[in-house]
Image (cartoon, rainbow, N blue to C red; front, top):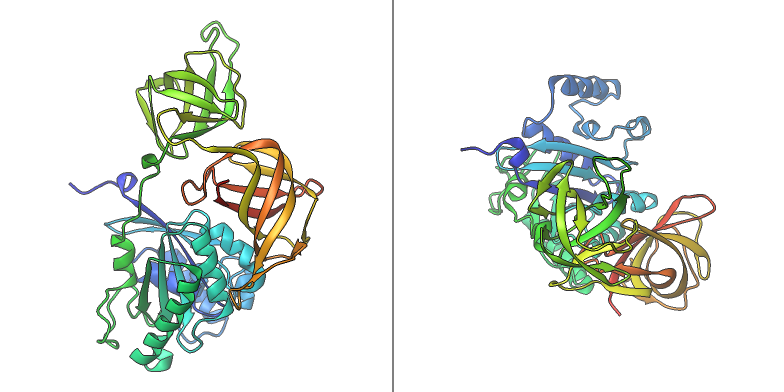
Length: 424
């Protein structure tokens, strides 16, 4: 029996590349050729294409939703689109190519299972190609699909495609990026996007859509060690729920069963799961990413920001000194010694940057030492010290407990995104 929509497997993927590589056109082609757009959407795009003087349908307008994007013909914000095929459902994050919007690419890629890196067949590997590939790898995306676009503008040349594949592999080897697939495409004409190309008989690797439908998504969130950040302590004052105390949160990984022995971090207090509730219904077990309320056998001190884990599984790290890779997101530079609000899952504290170990030069892939501040879009390895201990895993092991954001206390702006890569 065919699966219902809600039961279908979900793949989240992001697109990235340099300016005018054709990211929005590619997504438009995917939606158009897979018949995933409505008639009124198509009519709106047709009208907008005519108004802009385009001689043919401009599929990029399906994703460039902001008025400024349509006027300039570029992508500024992250555009999320949803579609499904009989095999799988998808969430697409179409991210900007301009260097000043690299921070938006970080946002779009942070929840993705797969990244599509577009390269213009005429231009080859550029600085933004390297930058976006490094970010995708740092964010723990296990599948990198390099789409060499605009093959029609190089005469569908196999040599041009092979040269770009070689250059990208050399770059990826330096960055230690694995899991790469190469596909030659023409997003404008539709070659190898949804349908196989008649112009490139030398390529037999299948279309992009076929890859998206069949590539393994990876381990389920429920297969990792159990982690539940406490979001809220529930203590209703009513006769019906007399003396009730529950801890509400979302499992970011693993499975929790009634009767499991658990440890609460950072205190280290131990107890046993007495009840698992979803709304007013009791459950025998909960799987990530379910949101539940957990009741424990012992009355111990637990607050928002604490982390509940199973005692029979690998334990998280606890420290006030944490080393990570950071992408700086704002024009206001990161400064050594400045106090920032650190938010990690449901926990919040303040901290200072004690050391910038090095900054990465995206052009040369070299490490720059003796750096005292970071500018917008800089990527660096830093060490911070927090007022309260952080409870964390390596980002490669758990995206929720292994990531954090920096907030400027003066403006309340999110100024940096950190991925914990070293456990000390």
